[in-house]
Length: 182
Image (cartoon, rainbow, N blue to C red; front, side, top):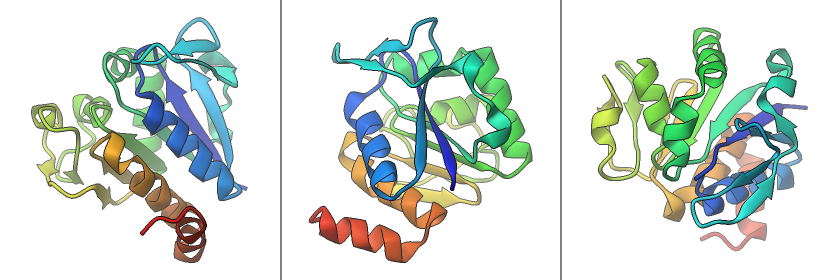
């Protein structure tokens, strides 16, 4: 079974994080929430505390198949400043392992230079942070092993695209139908 890690930093966008976690778990995937703070309790941008499954240093990244980043501010900035996460993202990129980010979080990939020559999307106003990317306006963008999305309103589409890429279109369609996604 695929092992996925959704990373949480103080100031993360709650709707994006919970939507991703929920949909991926509905798909039968093993989703681990990972705090990049010194506490398992991470507070979102709208002051909603979430208790993560693990602290960053407790995760065995050799067993992880995808690194996923919800957006929000200052959550995306806080993710980008975490050196350990930055190094894991670089390693995943070199190994062509799945990387996903939504809203402002694609800036993490942009700051690392891994969007060079790739297509990407982000929350409006963060385009300049996607260094070297061909920035599009679609809701969700797949460019090789990197998947990006624009924000809260596209979180469900993003999560379903992750399911499609990880499990298959049939499972993504089944979930969309069950959740009344039109």
